[in-house]
Length: 175
Image (cartoon, rainbow, N blue to C red; front, side, top):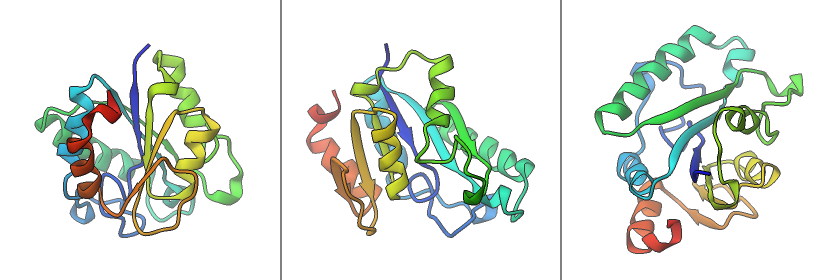
């Protein structure tokens, strides 16, 4: 079984300007590449799990999402970061699907293809639904990022950069 890092996209990987769907509006968060390298060095497999209700609401298309995702993954590859899978929920909240965080559908899809040690894995997000997903899916460790009040997270930092610096100084936390 392999340890995994599950990442939300908007607010974690990139600056969340609201319904980010175009390359021109996508800005990586400061420190995200170095942050991910810490987990890669410790043997974690990386997954993105992201609610994309902008598709269900008609703000952008599935094709827009796929174009942006392909571009983002290429940027990661250039930095020697491999994302094993990108799972997304394209439903609006009122559709009450089984894949929208905090429901576990995206994690369940990943577990169909990968043998993941959830107890020793991490979820990082900027919303309560991200942390609730971790608890609902029995992911052992959580990191909350941002200024929102998020309860039941093991760690909380204002920025990815601050979290990266903490983990660099305390790398044993993710071993």
